[in-house]
Length: 314
Image 1 (cartoon, one colour):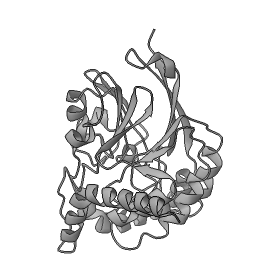
Image 2: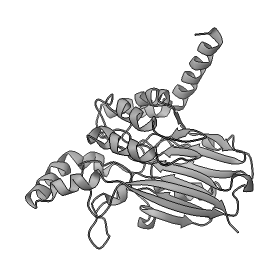
Image 3: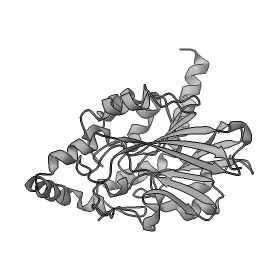
């Protein structure tokens, strides 16, 4: 390895560590007990009690196995979106959006996802956090499973991601080594005039810094924001973003037959917790995610892989 290459790698590692400083400081406090520093921690405080109760209820009703089968059947959702602000020379611009993997919590999920994503070429692929199933403890099993998925992604301009509330700072470097460019309160230009910004988790860690993330974006650029949860909709609209991509809610993961979800775990209007939404000039999409949290089950809410096609509005 040349000295110049070694210096470049070391500089990149220092830069990443600088951006993870806030998250590491909060992680150090977690050893003293779970407590949110962002917008919510209901499930983190109650999941250990809720999960076994919910499992017993589903097993007693004879539904648990069906829920597990549902969780292994992601749908491919195609989302055409038109913007008057999209630069004409990138028309169309294709984004593959994957969120909420929790990939070490379900056997065979990595294989299912890998088979599907390799059939979906795109300009960029974006990953909006929560690679790990648990919120603490071991995480090494995440890396080989994510490696299997990422190796099959066909993104012409790269794979970009952010961290979620289940992830930890130690996962950042191994994820980047897989070829995922993690955006921690920063932005990159992914096409001429098209910028992708990513913030650290706003829900539990509260380490999001939108002002820092947009510092390098020039005026007039088409701006896409990656945030783990939809809770930053107002700040993103005020900052002039065109598109907001997120996950976190799983759309409730377990929904009633008539469509309502008992719990979405986000402090924002319900309209912003599932699917396509608008806030002023800002268009947003909250993904149902490809994995599961708490329990590996889904009902009336299939996991989804989202194909987004951006076009210039006529």
